[in-house]
View 1 (cartoon, rainbow, N blue to C red):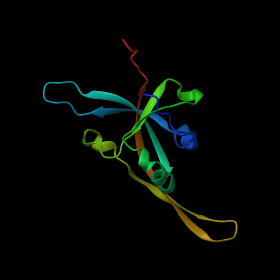
View 2 (cartoon, helix red, strand yellow):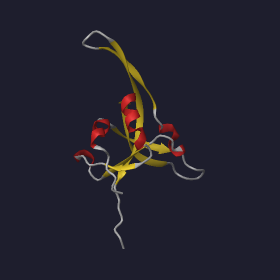
View 3 (cartoon, rainbow, N blue to C red):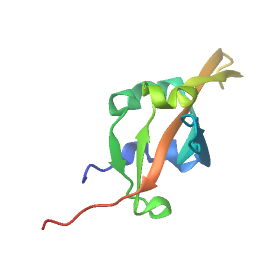
View 4 (tube, rainbow, N blue to C red):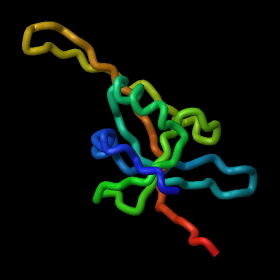
Amino acid sequence: MRRMWPEEFNAIISGAEEVVLELPAEAGEAPLHRNALKARITMEDYERIWPLAEMRFRLGNENFAGKAITLITTNPHYHAWHPKDGGSVDAVSESGRHYKTDYIVVHFLFDDVKETSPA
């Protein structure tokens, strides 16, 4: 897997919080735990990264070197962590005009990059 996370979207993940997702277990099994990044981003940024959903990307910045992420959007196994409303903020521009910024909370599966070498 050599697909790199686009540098133009690094700001989206730079402030993300590392969390652990706990997936429900089948009867008689232990719950599955997955590392993830949780981010509250603007709706505008979410619409820009939507085409990257459910694809795995290697991270290139120094904070996350050797890691990969996958934006969770429709995977039924991760339904509890699908994008959710992150509220909105009302503000006033320098010109005095009122505006509202909508936010959404997203989760990225977060794991180590493991590649196999050709035999």
